[in-house]
Amino acid sequence: MKHQILGLSTRAALLLAALCLGAVPATAASSAPDEAVGVSLPAGALPTISLSEIQRGQKGYGLSVFSGTEPQRFNVEVIGIMRNVSPEVSYILARLTGEGLEKSGVAGGMSGSPVFLDGRLAGAVAFSWPFTNEAIAGITPIGSMRQLSGFRPIPVSPPPPEVKLSDILTNHLPQDLLTTQFARLLPRFVDGAAPAVQWTATGFGEKSTGMLRQVLGSVSSGGKAAPGTVPDDLKPGQAVNVVLVDGDFQLAANGTVTDRYGDQVLAFGHPFLGMGPVSVPMATAEVVTVLSSANSSFKIANTGRIIGAFEQDRKTGIQGRIGVEAPMVPMVVRVKTERPREYRMRLAALPEFMPLLVGSGVIAGLEAASYTTGSQSLDMAAHLRLSHYGDLEVRQSFDGNNAASEASTFLLSIVSYLTQNSLEKVEVESVDVDLAQTDQPSAASLVGANASRTVVHPGDHITLNLDLVPYRGERFRHSAPLDLPGDLPAGRYSLLVGDGASVDAARLSMQPSDPVTFPQALDLLRSFHSRRDLMVLGFYGGPGLSVAGEAMPRLPGSVRSLWGAAASGSAVALRAAIVQEKRETLALPMQGVIRIDLEVRRREPSTGDDDGSDAAGAGVASYDKGGL
Image 1 (cartoon, rainbow, N blue to C red):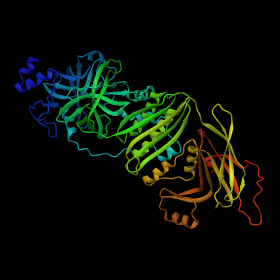
Image 2 (tube, one colour; image 1 turned 90 degrees about the horizontal axis):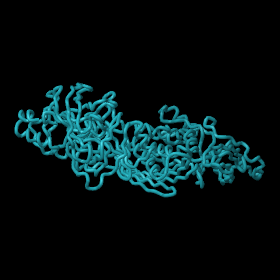
Image 3 (spheres, helix red, strand yellow; image 1 turned 180 degrees about the horizontal axis):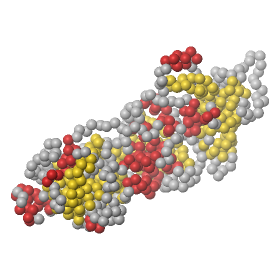
Image 4 (cartoon, rainbow, N blue to C red; image 1 turned 90 degrees about the vertical axis):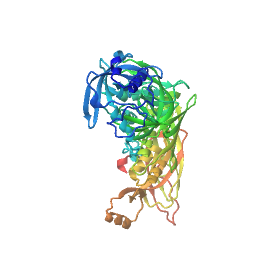
């Protein structure tokens, strides 16, 4: 170290001595502007070494927290330069030693650890390779990272929705939707290499943490730092967290601060989620220990207080500012079981990841309060407050071993459509979820249905008789009165009787609706029914049109011809006219749908009512979408 200091100016030597003691002040004087950086930096920026000055065999040191909150030094020896790994991006390859790195290798959470060569900031530890025998790290040059401060925070459009509105209504949702959403948290990087970031999940149970581990590898179960144990400031080498969920549950990515000048913070040395401009909370962190692993070692860390926000998420790192507040969406999950529980959290307002965060919040709440696997029944009522559109309430019931996953997927899919629809930018301002759980399935299967009469007149009052079989229970009958429309034409009139979700799917099959405005889509979402709803849908064959998202099932032939001649492409032919809907809320959910066919006759003044001698239940058939 003496020989290195002799070749430096007195000013630089003093700075290097301070760095050697672990004190890396944000206000350290700069010896010269960094020519590799295309942005103006304040006078307090640390001096840097350019990539062209770095040689194989050059030695230096890095800073990272291995326990507590203060950075410790580790040794660095340059192996070489990985040039132009991608356009304009090169990496320094180095061997790390000291602080137990010979045993642990590069640990998750070291992402962003600053590396100093010749007493100047060279870059950030960014990635390594699993199962290696040495701590070999890729280091992102600081020149590339400091350019992050020059990007303008231009908002980007959300990705195309993975879920269509029709998929939600017809319940054609992928069973692994939550798992595939978790996979989006995995940053793309150098082939075969893994970013040295560490995910920390606090309060999440075995199921949700397991999903994270499937796609992200190691996920540590951290905690919250005790008040006053973590300084409310950041300097190079200190641990920092990017927070996606805060509150009773926490989900964060733990890394290290690379550089600090003024209120600007650079970290990670690689992308977080690769989203470009973002606004996501920045928090301090406390490292409990480093856990050595043959696959990939990692830091176990506690999350401290949120003190700022990250604003850029680019290929060479993340950049944020202290004192800036990132928007977050409050979410409440109430679980009604033998011991009711309520959990409160805040979610990072990232449209691309909001569905995942909401869905995982449902799973986390159930895991914390009771359980998510095994035979059960769940009733869910969710209230989502939307910017400019008020509240959207959705209710649904789920039964069986996958009830928890189905409930989470259902709500995830709705939030996915809201935040990523192509019609209008919509912000979810709050999420409120109530879950009522019982320890066995409660849905009754609809096994039969008939009408009190099958020859009817317009305006008649009839009774529908439903035969239901509950889970491990005795068959019972439920009767539902129904008044027929007074303007029914003569001929066949059909009734679909069943649970709300199945009847909704049948309705969409008969009258396809492709909303062209968001209010139309919202009306369709608000028309969803629960499996606790006994729905009766009355229809008869009759050509119509669906135009610009609006169903017109009973159009005169002349109007249909005009639309057909126009060939606008906005009209979709309808094959049935839905003229009646009735809903009745049952004491228990049900599943199944049956079609009942009636014969409508006009009343003749000279004769009385039909004697109703038709056999009850005649004309009853199981519903088949292809037969409508």
